[in-house]
Image 1: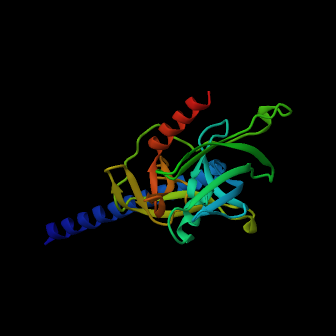
Image 2: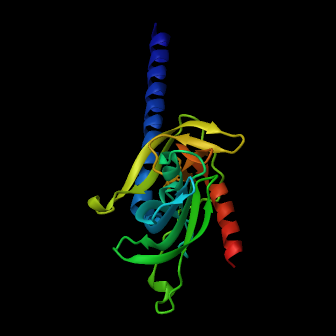
Image 3: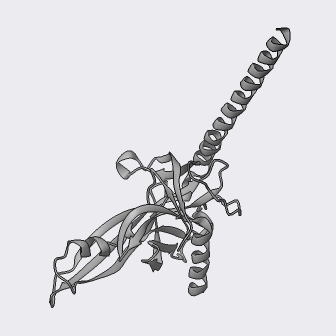
Length: 258
């Protein structure tokens, strides 16, 4: 009987230790993500784009229309290279879905692109690449001879250099920003990995994600950026494009601009 009591006590002690360990483990990601929010929230930025849209359909051309769009993007480097969801700054897919009849074409010209800094200033930028298949766009600040480059400080997304591979049911968090009406306050959104797609291209399916924003795992490793899965030129579900793919395309963009 005494041996049984000792065994029961040992089991309770082990269970308590295991529960405590799990509780601590569950608290660590929150601390990590809050640190990201505090120290690296400016790796997410708002981008504004003024576009002139020209539409033709059925042999008829319509008067050009000007639109001002805003989107969230992720800063990739200290020189201000930003990656974002193309759908958010290119209304082509949205317009084509509303135009009746076939043979319609849409031409989008960018008259002004700005990176909106946290202090309220605007940094003029140039759109470098539009990848409609991956729903990616890249832009880079224009050089201003009148200003010292050191005056403008960009905070790149923290990258550990590891190709983190999330699994279904893993907890993740994404950094973001609220709209102008809420003072563009930085946000932290908690979510979960619902699926990992490996072929024909790797994507992570993560809930509660805003296009253009970066996602981090429980250890603070950058997993990727939210984009739309494009099907026949149309945006469908929001997915996460892995960080290594984003950086690989960014490197190709740099080579083209040199």
